Length: 65
Image (spheres, rainbow, N blue to C red):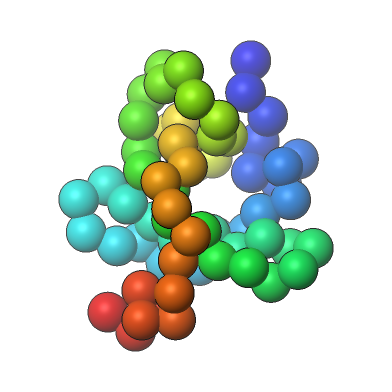
């Protein structure tokens, strides 16, 4: 069972296009993009009744778009 977003130390920032979203790492303020991807095998967490899979680091431009 995957941990929740809060258990992994993230908070939601913004939805992007195509099932992507930006989350912030609570500990250091870093930004990362995750994709909604049910039952994926790679690292991620559960949030809002959805499985989220790590995609890449995010930039401030991601937050502006």
